[in-house]
Length: 220
Image 1 (cartoon, helix red, strand yellow):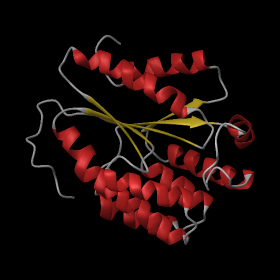
Image 2 (image 1 turned 180 degrees about the vertical axis):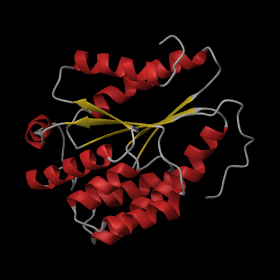
Image 3 (image 1 turned 135 degrees about the horizontal axis):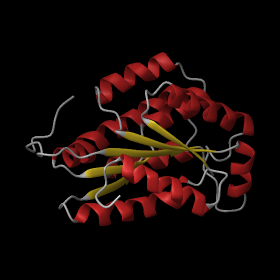
């Protein structure tokens, strides 16, 4: 992978991702997580870059609209996801980490394996090939997975907003997505923290406080 020209920081930045099926509630917590990180890292002069996938760059946001709204072949969908991801890595993630900043992304490659692989049924071998090509050895330092029964997630989403093409998928689709997320968590070698997203907001916030200590955040 092409590396940023920015000189490496004395203390490396960290890369944290939030994952989960639609309606699992991760977006409710990611902003509070970022705010707490910013407060903790301000004392050591570090910045937190909050970003998302699909998206994260002007090109990525344009691709996001296509991926979320337009019908397309599943391989086209996966290729667009990885095209946006490559741009995201080169323009946002790698430069931030090289500066010693922290990056928090609402979704990353695990989502592609879960949605296009588990949900759509695209070959995991093909996705693995794309993963290695696009991101080399880059993986998140920590992935926080909000795990929830698809039926509960669907009830949370009902009437909340106009659904995109993924949110309109069947319960069986989201069951497959969830199963692939859990499979990746099991195989991750400890990269994942799995949170029971059926808990109260307060209980989840308590679990996230433990994540800060694991990350070595000052004051935790």
